[in-house]
Image 1: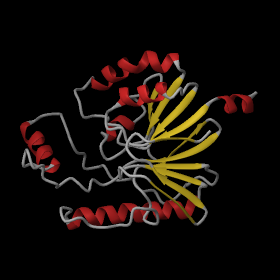
Image 2 (image 1 turned 45 degrees about the vertical axis):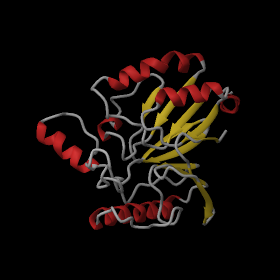
Image 3 (image 1 turned 120 degrees about the vertical axis):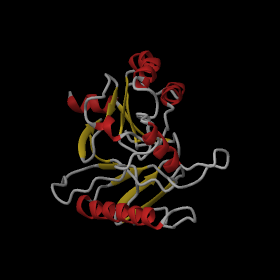
Image 4 (image 1 turned 90 degrees about the horizontal axis):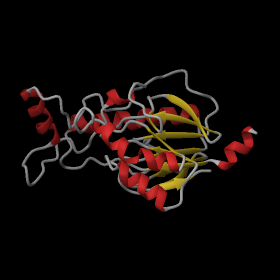
Length: 245
């Protein structure tokens, strides 16, 4: 019975959606997706709006999720408030997965690693003449609870207790051995770049410990795929979806 149940339910992996929850659900329904679990690889857009904005966003899609028997899961991106991923912000059909967490969906064991370093934190918007760092500092100075950046955005490293049998790793950032190649853009400060290097090297370490068959990630708003030491990897573009089962 268990095997029969798994064969009936679909598993999809989705790229960054940046707050477009309604768009994700509409796209899934229009594609005829039902009886499915959808895992978003970070930059879900959690924590940018008012305190109850996620309740409002979920309320708009709840009926469609229930009607089509769809559950959405997301890991943490650098454009997500880490506080959402504490297990206390979940809804019936929307779940915010903690870092270094194993979840089994549709018969696949998935290991989640959230977080990334924002390469664009110091990029100045030509219209506002402000960077996200500057905007965030202004919000803090004014006493506002709103944030556009979180200093604890990077992957949280652990060095032991990795699972030995995992089908898929889902992360927001990419291991250094995967595409895209590491390049420092002109607007990226040296201190920020070093944090990016550190994060990607750490994920290389995770790769060497787990050696999964499949690894999915987002963050780069582009599509990449390849094979590194028998691990098939794929970077999903914004809202790009791929079916696993």
